[in-house]
Length: 349
Image 1 (cartoon, one colour):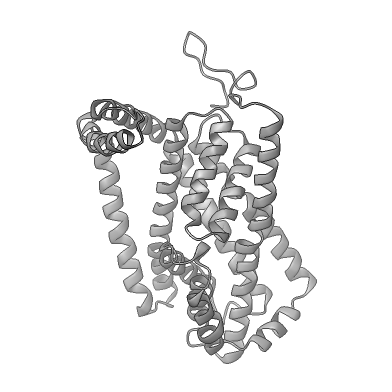
Image 2 (tube, helix red, strand yellow; image 1 turned 30 degrees about the vertical axis):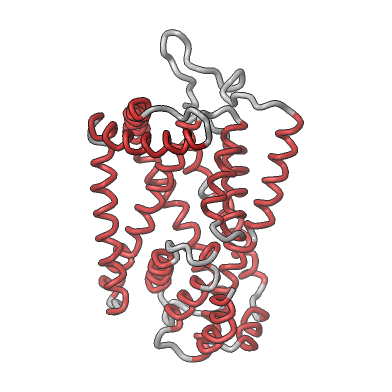
């Protein structure tokens, strides 16, 4: 709360005047509003394919319910990302998926999201250099992105490299979990059992990534570019032209602020994103453009941060009601049959 008061009460007004920002929003024409509604509606479903790809057998409708509910919690509750994962897992569990399946899906989809998030600043930096709009302030963030992405890829590769390494990781986890289980007077498994689980988990991870790494990459990229498209349309809708702020500069601002907002300071990066985007877009521009940029950023956040909250709440309540009406069932049976004895899998998987 202190940070939000500081951002919106003291720092944001130094970049733009709230009265002029409101005037800029009032000048939006019908064409601009229609374009914003279209891209905002698309953004609500843009990440659904990634959820479906990362969890074989999941229906599109259930993926939308799951993603929307998790997003609403992450955007509105302190430590919401962690709580949102818990709700996501409860939903997957109610649809008949095993903990191993939805844990793997969460880790893989999260990893691919981070790959895109870390890679976009580099892409933006290259595009800025090619267009001649390169700013020195963007270079450090790109270097950080490359370094973190390189370390992440190396660690991820090592974890999936061999059964021996997976078992070595599983044993200390098992030691900690076993100690917790003893305190709770509940058997949570031995070190060797956790080592075997880690090996099995590694095999599942390798299979999923080998089969779907292209689909994971494409769907994760689509999800991030959909967010960028909402920002770009908002920037153009308030009257900022290509000559004033190019699309590559908008992409750079989006990419670098996304990188900064990965640190969970506030739910959904509230305050941090608004301040960072406005400062990046208004850098070196006139006060008129600065006010328009602030209007575009607030409009963008209303459509991508605030709008998903009520939609996610409705999705969560729908899941709760439907869960009470019928017992938990495997979504792959009978509508989603399991592979037969010969090993042939359903076509949709």
